[in-house]
Image 1: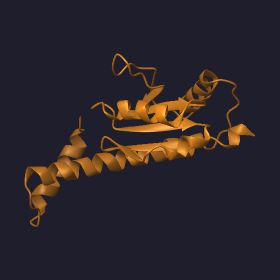
Image 2: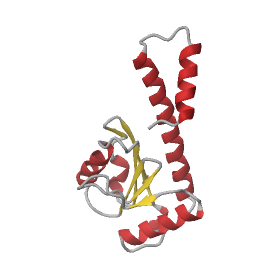
Image 3: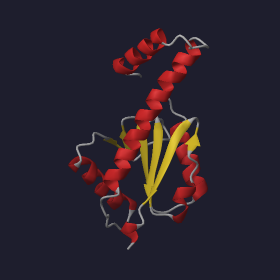
Image 4: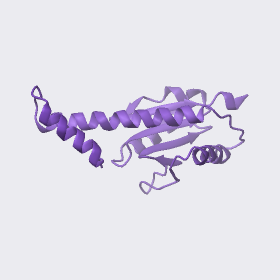
Amino acid sequence: MLSPIFLSVALQWKKSSPKLTGGYSSLLGFIKMIGNESVTQRINQIETILLNYKFRFSCENELQTGIENVLQISNIEYVREKSISKRDRPDFIIDGIAVEIKIKGSLSTAIRQVARYASHDDIRAVLVIGTPFWILRIPKRLHEKEILSIRLIGSLL
């Protein structure tokens, strides 16, 4: 769902743009571009905040708790372990961004999970955070949504 501000900007842009061609699809493309830009900015903000911390953990749940503490300290609103379908429950959802934490498992399993999350209309992007060597090999786009991976190398020391 687009905020009234995005819709207002898009409508003003349409009225003031004499070179606009393609009608409704061009307007939707512009709205999508604005939405994706804000998703990218939000993901970058989360990444910047998280990379300022080192996490000590021995299991995925401890890393999740550490990340949750950082989100709380940083006043970032989130929902933890919200079901988005019978099968899918990201570790966190932040502004429509599904956040999945990984400290073990396989690349193929992670890609399937991330692809399922990205297939949901309510999910705007997916952020994968963890320690496996393969985490940076997760595709950058799935189902036309941005996917970002953050490897927490400093936490391994």
